[in-house]
Image (tube, rainbow, N blue to C red; front, side, top):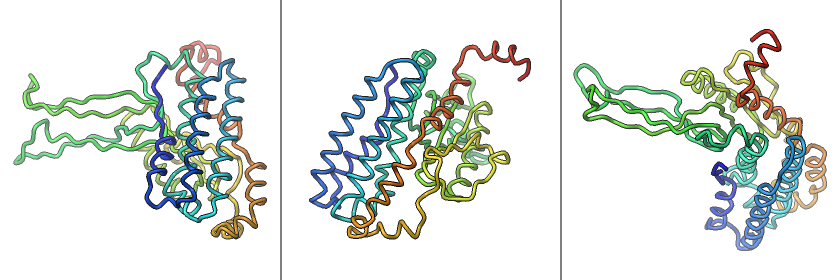
Length: 303
């Protein structure tokens, strides 16, 4: 089985060592780490057919993420965890860690033994040569521009550049090449959408056959068509808008969170992470990893 990264687990452990973490929250974070380890064990143990696997995994995700957002962050008797959650990336990193498990469990036969990496990755977005007629540099001054992706199906890539046919004074650069890239946002706004559109164009300029997806929990903007961008699709995981700002403002203090806890919990329960949204993403992956694409094309009669 592929080795999978642990971005969420790393964030939790870093939080425990954070000097700004209130003393009262330390045992709560330690309990969260134990809960996280149990969640991982449960994900590893899931086996079965595709439908059953996806259903069980999304159910476990909803249970764990609700615990994290409500019990750990929202219910804290201090403001640090709630006010800094965007910087700490505790909740947003859960999806980043979940996606590799979901994809690998959904398509174990198609992805194993292909020398691929699943999960967050720094991948090539362009190559440039910083040299000129009057300024010669080894390898032509090759430099790589790279982009961090929250999720990618990628493969290690080494680029070797030299002015000599025997590659004397060569420069070797190491990177990753992304075949599928996805950004995971908690709340998708217009600025994030525009940044993702630019990134998607870079990804496809380097690898024309690559696919780029934008996944968000909550929509926080007026929908914009992806047809005029290089984004293949935006998938809203909860199929809902973000809680209105006039409601969220009551969550900024401990007292406000206590008084409005039912509103927050009810909204989460009413809009869980949707199994069908993850299946939509998996359908895109399936078409890319399937060995029967030619047969499918012949059956349809077009491509």
